[in-house]
Image (cartoon, rainbow, N blue to C red; front, side):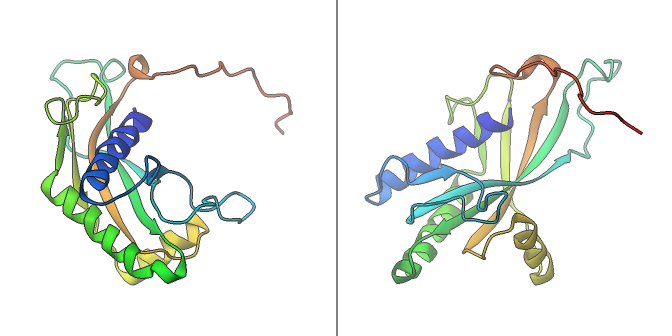
Length: 182
């Protein structure tokens, strides 16, 4: 489910930017900002990057009355960090495209099946709100990510349902633990 929301965001943002500016097919990408070894995960500049920053359970209980908690999906909110990575000479472009991201989500605050045909059928709709952070929170976020600060905005994407039956793709079964627990 999370990956399908990201894919929908990439599709919609890519279309927006290609219609408004001259951008390539892979202008908007899904990526970490830093690898586990601390190196940069993004090797090409001039990109808008979507990164998962956090997951929270939705505090509003939308489960139908009488439904077994194990049968109903858990609704989560995901925090998506949208960063613009441009070479130093194009720093102003990074600000221009970041403004474009904000403009896009201001005009498209909700993805549903009528405006986002590729949205997973299990998802009714998702909404986008800017998640405000103070400087200390922002510093902590970038420290956890392990990257150098880039122009960015954090969005809270609300109401992504997760349940056992709606996972997609091939997930290999857990094969066990080979070590001993003491």
